[in-house]
Each structure stands twice: as C-alpha cells, then as structure tokens.
Image (tube, rainbow, N blue to C red; front, side):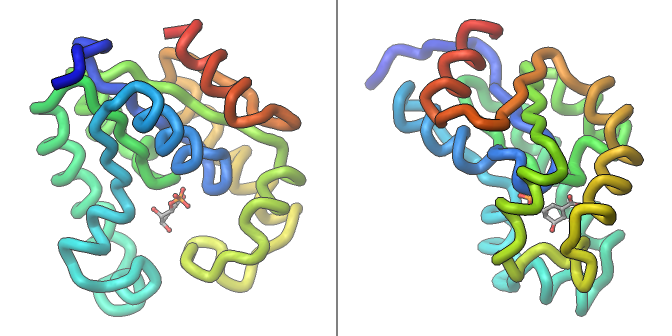
Length: 172
Ligand code: S3P
C-alpha cells in the first residue's frame, strides 16, 4: 500500500469549468490518493443524471444530497474531493470541508469558463444562459463565498494541468 502523503483531505472548489475535475483526477493519479468526484458519486447513487435530478426533484434536493455526501466524506483522509460548483455556497458545507480538509479554490476568467463549459449539456444551472455576461454575473455573486472558504487560491487561466498541480502542491 502506498504511503499516505497527506493526513488531511484536499477539497477542490470553484465555479463550473474552473478545472476541479481535471486537476483532482490528475492529482489522485500522481499521488495515488482516493478520488471522490461529488457529482459523479451522486449520479451513481441516485442512478440519475444531474439534469434529471434537478428536473425531477429540484435544486434543493440536489443541494441536500451534496451536504449529506460531504459529511460522509470528512471521515476519510488522504482523499481528493472534487466538489460540484455550488457546494461552497452553503456555510454548513464549508464548516464540514474544513473539519478534515484543506480547501483549494480554482479560479478562471469568465471568458475561460465560457470556453470550457460551452459544449456541455449537464449543467442545469446554466440552462439557456451559457454566455459570458451571465457567467460573469453569477461568478461575481458567488465570489465572496468561494474566497471565504478557501485556504489556497489558484488562478488557472493559461496554465497547464502540470503547472496548476505543482502550484497547488507547493501551496498546501
Ligand atoms: C453546479 C455545478 C455542477 C453541478 C451542478 C450545480 C453549480 O458541478 O454540481 O450542475 O451550482 O455550480 P461542476 O462545477 O462540476 O460543473
């Protein structure tokens, strides 16, 4: 069994398209850490896609699933937890993450975010609003909460996966 590198969890937060899934995937492979992609875990447990969960049960139901899952995850260590973009919006979730995790905020400009999300169809929050002005506005509304939750902030525009990962590790 691989040696445990971290005695805590690494929790990635940030707006949709900030690179949470890509970076957590890379880090978990590099450091042989357990990866939990929250959206994916919810989809598997519910046996439903995120858009279907939103359409059938509503956003609040989805947010409660996130909160319950996050609580469960704090029992582990040496995990990479990739949060959905809205997880850090609930204060209760942030308290939970910090129990056993170091919280890393990934950021990018609205233009970069737009480029990264424009072809995806599984983000109901952006339904019918996939444009730079809407993204800019929503990012601005969420910014304070993201920043308050973060132990480390990493700007991802024009950086490679390797550069972002190295910066993350050096800042932990
Ligand atoms: C959401 C982000 C999504 C997903 C859901 C809601 C949000 O995750 O959890 O569609 O409110 O920002 P990603 O950040 O992985 O796209």
